[in-house]
Image 1: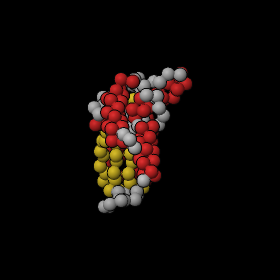
Image 2: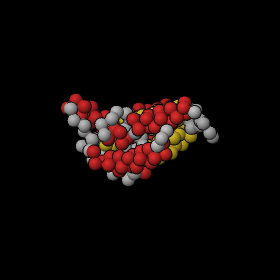
Image 3: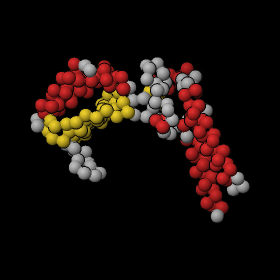
Image 4: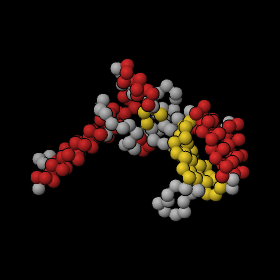
Length: 193
């Protein structure tokens, strides 16, 4: 019985130590987990100078290749074009394994720093050229996916080197309040454990 109390205590301690509110109080860990999208914080980081960004992903799923060499050339042009729009290729896979259903012939995922950056790319001549090549060389679909807010790596590194946090503590107030409420409930449940 004492082992199960110890296991529960360890689980609570790890949850508290690795949660986003702990990070807001100066802890360490990966920022971006904790359901920011449900906390009404989606507006944080859309500007260029903030430490939190909300990335946008573009998923290019190709079901059939009509001209593989021309398709590969289009992807090379894509990889060269997106960095000027605050974007990068995060995945580029031929015949990815399927967990369920029919696998795509090719999947490419792009990441942009914001929805605005992705839209600037979509409105550009570089996108129009890529889209024309994509339509000629394959049967593909493009989807835009909103990511979870994360710390900008450069801002976090600069904040560490300058000896300041780099994050706006007010951005985490709702998370800290929710954490405190949950912790109070947990203390009430485990009181006397």
